[in-house]
Image (cartoon, rainbow, N blue to C red):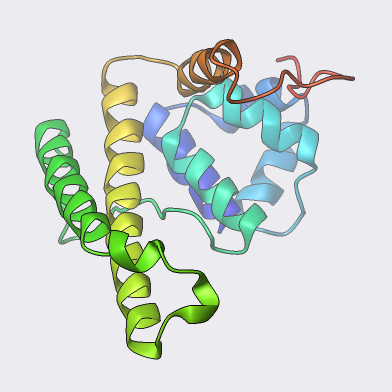
Length: 182
């Protein structure tokens, strides 16, 4: 899966394997091995490629791999209109549905979880699925709009993290840098 995403991202960027190898600091033949899923990719290489290639497709594949599929998938099927405006409109629609879904379970969420009925738990699950649909739409819109406007996903997420730290919602990481230099 990562190999396919890497090849598709590289092809989308119109880069030869040699350029990807320079970013990851490996040989062109190693990139070929990765693209055919014949060799595993070290975490250091994944970080370098995530930041260096600036590909939402690759980042989303890596998140799915790391979490065992607990992340939004990159949508690229025949039935997906990937025009940036369509993606944004779909995200807005999905977010409205997610907000309405969450509004509908607030009374259940007031109860302790061990005091809810099976029907209430099912309703919460159904409503959380609406949130996941909104997340999938948002991740895909973000990936495509950022790519088309030449914006760095890494820079956007770094900026977001800095804002969370400034607001006190997140503590600054201590110790070695979490990011690999490119």
